[in-house]
Structure formats: structure tokens, C-alpha cells
Image (cartoon, rainbow, N blue to C red):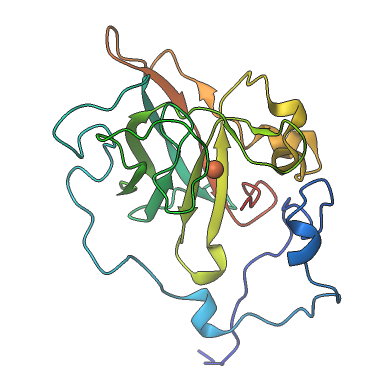
Amino acid sequence: MEVTNRVIGYRRENADPPYLHPDYVATRTRSPKQPLVPLAHTLSEVTGPVYGDRPVGELDHDLTRQHEGEPVGERIILHGRVLDGDGRPVSNTLIEIWQANAAGRYRHARELHPAPLDANFDGGGRCLTDGEGRYRFITIKPGAYPWGNHPNAWRAAHIHISLFGPAFVTRLVTQMYFPGDPLFFQDPIFHSVRDPRDRERMIARFDLGETVPEWALAYEFDVVLRGREATPVET
Ligand SMILES: [Fe+2]
């Protein structure tokens, strides 16, 4: 067998929003002013990485059990699968989430929204996918929050999601939304993903089958890393 140094790169086509989306005001100053220069993927990009510096804890996936008491708000189950661009499950991969509490407030030093903090809710969680690429979180449905982008601007309720996948080039940071949110129409971050079909892939599906009676509604959200069906990036 011939051994070569050729590195097989990942697909580049995707539905990511443009760096400059003027309605999303922050992109006016942070977007590149010059066209990007495509570089071939290198070995260190298509291999590695992986987790953080701490092992994933037994309760890291349950944002309602990280303190003495239970957080206030609507308990929900968020579950789904992580798949690659060919529809194969990505097993044993890290998935991390962070979000506002039920009142729409983040636990963050620069948070300005005058809504109450919840002593029993930090808003961060993580877990590993199983052998079939499945993940599952227990959390609280986040509230909408104002963000000053334009007059009376409110973000549609969302949960931030970060994955590495099997290589650095499969890294994905995105946001998951809830079906039927009344704020979609005025959220320029949501609309920075231009194709409505791509936006649909950022909205979770209400899942009655996984809803636990007398306990919590469930939402299903699959994440696709790299490839035509890839979940769009949203930061
Ligand atoms: Fe957010």
C-alpha cells in the first residue's frame, strides 16, 4: 500500500450565516473587511481534540440538580442525536450548553437585564453522546431577554450549544430555538441564517413521545456536523 502525506479534508459547504449581517449590529464591526483566503486542512485540524480539563460529571447533564434546591421555571427534557454529514452517529462526543434562566437572565458578570437571578440555576451543562450519538439534558426553559440591538429588541428564547465532534474542523457553536416562538420575526441573529429551511434546522421539535407525564415536556434537537445538512453556526 502506498503511504502518502495527503490529508483528507472535511467538506466546506454549509449554511452558516455571512460574517456581515448588518441587521445584527455587532457584525458591522467584527466582520472581516477582506475576502477570506481558503487554506487546505492540516493534520492537526482533521484529528483530535477533545474534552476539557475535567471529566464529565454524573450530574453535568442535569441543570436542575446542581444546587441544594430546584430552579424556578418550566422543567424540560432536551434530547437528540449528533450526526456527521453522512448521517452517521457521532458517539462519545462532548456536547455543552449554556442558557439564561426562566426569567431571561444569565449568570454573567456583564449581564444587564434587570431580571432576577436564580440561586439554584447556573445555566451551564454538558454530557457525552452514547454509542448511537444520543444526548439528553434536563433543564429549565429559558426566558426571552432584551439585548439592545435595535429599539425594543428581544431575543427569541434559545439555548446555546457547543460541540467539538471528532476534529477541530467539525467544531460547531450554535443556538437552538423553540417551536412557535413569537419573537422569531424580529430576531436578526436567527435571520442571519438566510435560507428558511436552514433556520428550521435550528428549531427543536416538541416531542410528546419523550415527554414524561406529570413531570416535564420534551424537545428533540438533532445536530449535524459538517456537510450539506450541517446545523448552521450561530454565535
Ligand atoms: Fe443567548
